[in-house]
Structure formats: structure tokens, C-alpha cells
Image (tube, rainbow, N blue to C red; front, side, top):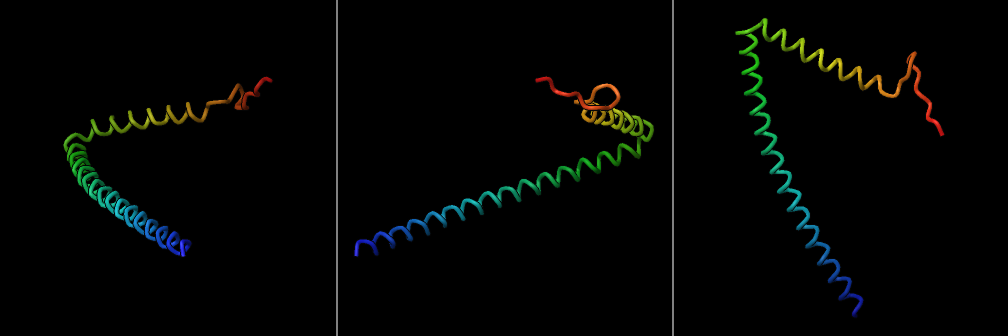
Length: 95
């Protein structure tokens, strides 16, 4: 008889924990969805502003793009060049 009570109590506690976890997951999900909508709205606003800037200032926009591309290229070059010695071969670790 005691065993049945323990099992029933365990099932009840497990169901309560599952419900609490499900409720918390749903709250987090709803919060994340709201945040994503705000981010999407903000990004659309920035996109429109950038598009208008490019239309009004095509030369400046081109130079800015070229600068960003050069910076990204330099970063990529540094990252790809890490760990390489002369001649493109990797340095061997000394023991």
C-alpha cells in the first residue's frame, strides 16, 4: 500500500514539475518572439535608412563599402595566416 502512495505522489510531483517547465518554456518562447519582432522592425528601419543614404550619396557609400571590404579582407587574411610559417607551411611545435 505504501508503495502505491509513493508512486502516486511521485507521478503527481512529476506532472507538476512538467507543467511548470512547460509554462516557463512558453513564457521564454513568447518573449523571444516579441524580441525578434522588435529586432526585425529595427533592421527594416536601418535598411531603409541605408538605402536612402546610398541613393543620396552614391560616392560616399561606395567608399564606405570599399573600406569595410578591405577591413574584412585584412581580418580574414590574418585569421587564415595564423599558425603558418614561411612558405605557407604550419609551424611545428617543439616538445
